[in-house]
Length: 439
Image 1 (cartoon, rainbow, N blue to C red):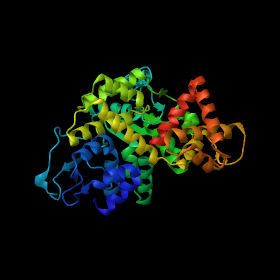
Image 2 (tube, rainbow, N blue to C red):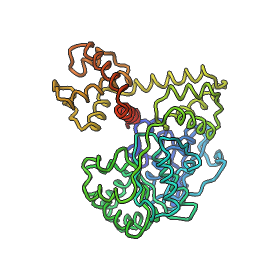
Image 3 (cartoon, helix red, strand yellow):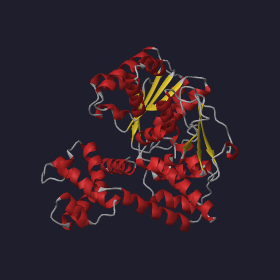
Image 4 (cartoon, rainbow, N blue to C red):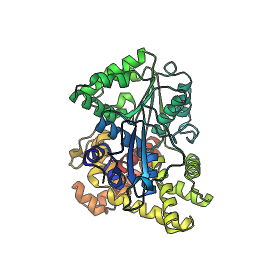
């Protein structure tokens, strides 16, 4: 177990799933850590690899909250069970030096990004920004569904800028808000402003969570102005257009449009296949064409989900000493889908759909028959059957509807509309990814 202080911070900073599966398995070596280096230990090489690849920014930020500044490097040592000692350390193949200002994932580069029709424009714009920081497309605003590669492009920009010895700050907007709150409480706003306003490039993930955060919006507004006036580059991501972020003040919406706004769409089948081939190569997973095609047609559109499945396939094959074949992959995906459906609850679906469609959650379970409410209810019913193990009578009872025949009718209608309306299909996929990836 990690020490109590860092444990509490990680619990607040990460999703329940990430905390329980990964962070809870770490031991923080407080006695040998310092401002330069934060050292953690675990008995699982898989957990160490997953955190370093996917969750290093969360771990870094938690260390900063605990110590008041980010460590220059984070080391996760793999040790033998019940032998938590320095001599048991397994060194990584490549020692990575991180910028004093940021904690980027070094594997998220432009070369590792799979380009297709769904993301070509966003990729080109991101690459172009690195050639003329602060001059071309400032700010760059990238929006799109969950797990489609926005964060990858954001960090690719940062990694390339680091090679040019630029000062890079990469944070989620939640981390920015936490830093702001921490600095206010500890009367260290000068340190906060120096950190965010003296960088060459500011990379902000998930800007939509600025919604209704008035005090943070005010601070971010001044930070934005300071950087923009100094010709420092700003790149942001969101799951929606600036104009669609409810509770965002007009002056920020206006500034977000000063540069270039581009989207990442859901990948078509050919791009999904290319993504799986690229990610499997990077992760050292050897897959046949048949297996690649099966994964591409079975999984949803989230690149994040594809990466997780590939790691799971490789880990299962190694631990069970089995050949990676179609039968093994089918078994793992079937189990994952079952576990996924067990973890998704009906209130989660209503919460996400209501938020996205601007409907009160209570209205979805009411007898209201206005068009917006009826459409939202139909989407909830469709997603409930797709993403949960609930039967049609279960869904009908939860929503206060007469019987399962009403549920069946709504599902049929939803399928008809999805076939006819490409925009609805895209919106449904986006909602699915958000529900699946919900904390």
